[in-house]
Amino acid sequence: MFECLTEQARQVVEEARNLTASDDANGTGTAHLLAGFFHEEESGLSALLSSCGVTLPEILPWLKLHRGGGDGSSRQMIPTTSGFKRSVDMALREALALGHNYIGPEHVLLGLLDRCNDDSPCDARQFLDEVGVETARIRIAVLQKLDAEQVTEGKLGGLILQLARSIDSLSLLIDEADISNSETRAAILREILKLMHVKRELQSKS
Image (cartoon, rainbow, N blue to C red; front, side):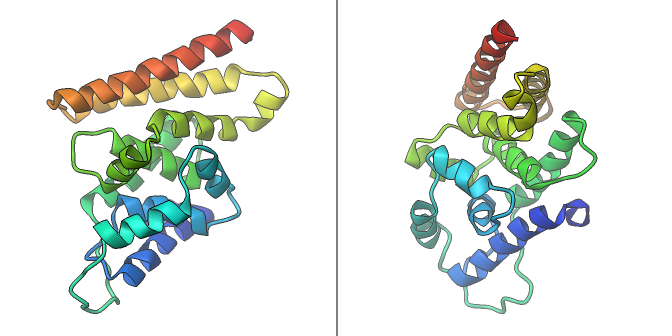
């Protein structure tokens, strides 16, 4: 899967692994992946995350506290957690859902947000919960970024379509993951409702 990523997306993954080594963590997790976006400048996702309330000065100490303290073994082969791998896998689904023939850093971030919404433990979700940032807010910002040209020209059809596809993707996530935890299911449903609300607002303006 990693070989399918664009150069920018690979840089995010590589920076996440570098952070793992510097923290002496036992494996590269989803919070490392989230922090990796701040070390890739070309895509502009670091500024996007900051505008949503996610900042590097907050996430780095959090990583030290929650993900540091490895066994000091060789850093030549740093393992990735199942959550990290799942995030990258979900990036492919996001790219396909949006009709894109590449997997860029935006798709990786969307995949990470999908991972934050499933029923398994997720350190990125834990961090976002602690700083009070909702995944729906980041998702909408990423979709707006991907559709920026259409938005600036007043052509909202593309963004509305992307929101619809994200709603479908999250709906499938509930079914495919067989999520039984009521709180997790409720959180995903709340995000779907927020996306549907934004979609209706845009439709009223189109």
